[in-house]
Length: 493
Image (cartoon, rainbow, N blue to C red):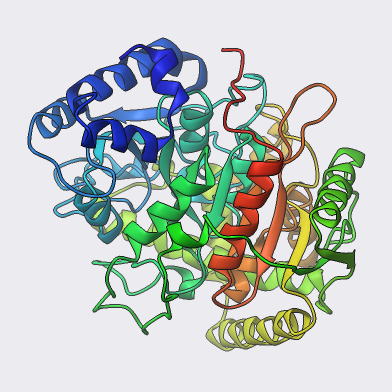
């Protein structure tokens, strides 16, 4: 199969070609590998090729909803037995997985052919993908710009046509941010829906989840059916699923929805005119489709929510650093400077404070539920600004020296917990202040690529639903996709 024909199909379409015998899995795999060889040196999406493993698998009989379709997984948590899970870090040199993660197991059950692992920032801790261990991933629409993070490598690979859909995960926007940067569709499932095992019951108290980034809505819907095909016996609770498959909901009209929208940053910071235009354009499109759309937002203190998100994030990062030290004998210099600083801040968090933060997470749940008692969905920008340039968020050299000194004398954690440094960290969220709400509350949310800036950069919009709103989100996304198609758009690589 030549690349033009391969690119014309999404994963569901490629699987149908395999099912009918029009193409064989090895042929699809070789097309995907050839495309990766053509473009990966320009976008740095794949950091751990698995070509030999994939060729052996493609030659075997495959069954499942997506049998024979080439696929990539994120190099974070999505373990493949016998392959290193690097987590974007130099500290994990010997981190060879002994078994598949639950998500990878289900992707394999669906017949997917995994041939590589994609780039991610160290421990997935940033909304950009520029790890020291592997170098930056680049946005296929403008290789001087970021594809977002932390699933930036997966988004870059999908946008560049290497695969139609790729594994991703989202703990603070890490599916939705890269999807918005790269002109793709990204759905973050709600808390507890996708299994996190076998090594954990849930990630980040259920605030983080696996998922995918795709070119088409139906691919994400089918993938959600794959990931939720059976309950997780080791999960903390049994998440409710709709009676019909998610793929069926993606084929149905959403009905008339009540949608509240806001362009205001929850941090009170500036929002680009392009991001405002993206939301207003989406609101007009929705109204034209018959939905009830008006300006409204939840009654939530956005700065407090961001602080509550960051506190948990820093503690989780401290745990990741400690795990790497204990499991792999990692030395301090094996971790990036920013990681060491934020982990030090996490270690300074007291248990009483941590519990109070988790209690406030529940307060934010209640406030968002009150909003959803009046509106089916919340519409916001996915990004406050168009995708930034590579290196734009690098820690300034003078600050790096100061941090190194503080780490050397053991004061980094105490300083990192002060209000001035906390405000500085919040400032780094100003480019992506909208996505953490859905993680803190565990609600499903999606980024839909309905808008582009005048110079052609993608800039998605976000929809946040209430508990169990995945079917509504998928139905609406499919309606928007039909009204304003995007899957055929291809960057000029």
